[in-house]
Length: 303
Ligand code: BMX
Image 1 (cartoon, rainbow, N blue to C red):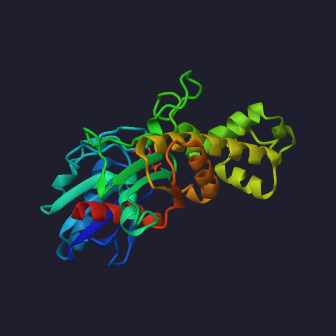
Image 2: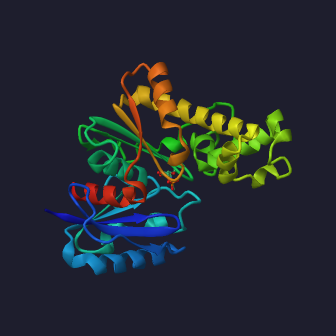
Image 3: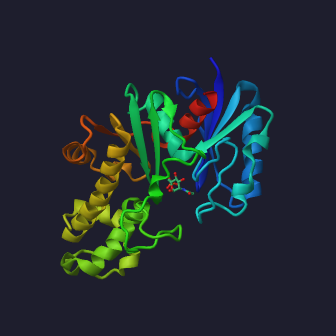
């Protein structure tokens, strides 16, 4: 059985381990902090590969950002990535095959192979963290689009009248409403617009200082403002997901990412099936957790 070194390059940490083609981790999982500069990331990756060079056939890398069709570079230069990151040619890291893929596409591959999407024909995977990423695998094939950048769903527009600026500089991207950042934005807008804020446990906080944790904690404490903010956030989540369901006709939608534990998957499943033209859609929470990027990168690199 062939083996890949799966490496997940996150904003704060790099996670890595050896993965087989069934999507199983067959080594210890290790982590190191992500250096702040592009050239330091490159040398850290070189050292990680050297550590495992003799036990692996290929290297798979998971990264945020749109990836080129050749799977060698990350093209986007959003504020979340260090300067020069999009100049790195990952294929030069070693003389074995090195394959880089978008983090959400990797998570989709992990869930399809050995997670909540296992056994389904068409899996739409949505990862909800700082931003929102997406991936679709149908009949075992990852949908990449003409240049490899498909399913950058966080960037799709959900309003036409320039209501809210996104961290990318454009307006009304889905992720500025329905990601972790989006929940914070909902809290700020809600503090301005909802009467419930005046009686909320957060009424003395400046709206910009209200955190996603405050909102989820506020729900436990039955704070009416927090509940309203959360429901608005779920509404934005639903609007994006129901459209994507109509576009891709998945039989399973998997929700992953740091915010996925807060998402009401049962509620979403019910509403999507009621309001989409597509029928029999299951909505599941991801099961590969923090290892999704690493497993998926390995599985995709093994091809
Ligand atoms: C953004 C975009 C996607 C990514 C998604 C989730 C960048 C740097 N990122 O939409 O490529 O899949 O965020 O990323 O352009 P996360 O880091 O929030 O999980």
